[in-house]
Image: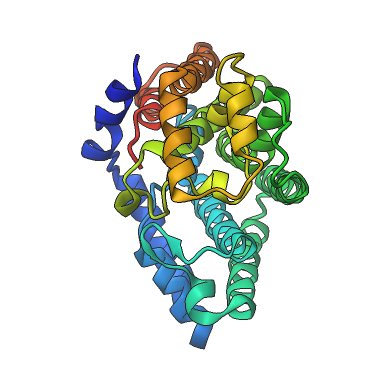
Length: 329
């Protein structure tokens, strides 16, 4: 599949998943945010109203519903997963000095870093309040593990900023920590609340991890090919910020284009040099190679669903994998 085909696909954005159980999660999120006061209420409401794919609660809900009807424990675990995700986005924006999120001004750009960090902390606290009050100890274990890993991933990314010698293994280790682990933990959490066997919990967790790999790779491709009005960030933001992603790793490893690209990266990235790099990413097939890797990750993710009981929720998890692969923002 070539890059023009990738850019033309509109699979997930034109056909979003809209499910009644997700509307219940949305209502619970609004109830949780409504308990806040002052600046925190304003900031949380702003983030909630800006939308989002709600991928983590979807994974939690349907990982649980593979093993029985929706129950209160699964629902509350899904709410907690999304609150943790929201909190992590706020903290990420502070770390990255981001002015925009989903095309809207970030909390830190409007309210300052202090208020943004406190808002993120509040959301973390609310997530753990939900988990503890409903005695969801397994879910808490998986989600705490995710938060710890995400923090480690942020530290590692900062340490390797503008390090253009990262390997593919380094890249996958980082995206496992920053992206894959929360998707995997959401799946494990949902399955655990439904009484799934440990084997099925781990199968769904591995599905979630491979889904996270693909999600991040597509995100990295969209950094170069996406519409800034849809992605909410300027083209080439990762490279400008010194974060090496899979398309660039493939370009730098290319025997023809790699030496040229490394020399270009010795200087500060300008709009002109960025255009040259994007053209090289396309001409060298680095973009197609990265997309092919995302496809392989999705194939691996789906293989871990094979032993999961058949039903509508397994179908949703399968569809989500393809929506992740073909998303446009």
